[in-house]
Length: 320
Image (cartoon, rainbow, N blue to C red; front, top):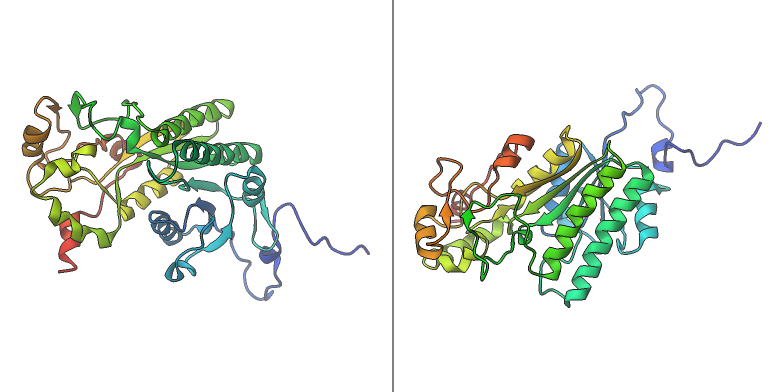
């Protein structure tokens, strides 16, 4: 009798461990890879997906913070190396065989963090490698971090004709935002190649972690300090919600969604901010919230069911 195979096409070694035959077999959890899961936003996305019942693996060049290390398993992967990417998405001998979904957050996170060509080459290469490896492996459920900078942020010298700004705005003004826009365009083509695929790009506003809300008071007398993105922000936990909704949605094809919080970073009504900072820009609010932000989240509300849960004033008051 031939010896049993150590490896199979369906299971990794850890998934084939000897179990008590008296117990029912374990059900396979849905598996999602989160790239950049050690980062400022990534740690919240990892927690969101774990709490929603997903088996989560964090692919990053940096290990998670000690308090995050037990939330999900970590794998050191350089996403600029296509070989590492396709290997990590297909097979870890003692971890898993294959993944069901990918949330791609890893990137140099903003302009001016490195020379322009380094930002562009790094971010566009990582996104391409994720898209191409997923295509080859038949992974059809992807959510990718794009950016509000695609709108033309900062809103000067090209001030928008109207606010809130919607997903049809495309005016990259940096190597960072150019790479993000081209990532969106790559998603369109990859879904054309596979009409069954879903690739959702989420244009993130300025991500804020809960400990940053104490800083908002310092901006209240200077609306110009936050005019560069329409006075907006996104709580990292609400952003994580958006990525989960994107992955769990029944949508097919390429989609782009703005994600921001429902309110601005200021206590005064948005119309007052607009009159002072953007007097020649049309203010066309989409809700009855007097503090509605300058980035439209109507599409995400309607198509993803996105509903921001956190606002900076409530969160800041918790630390007082």
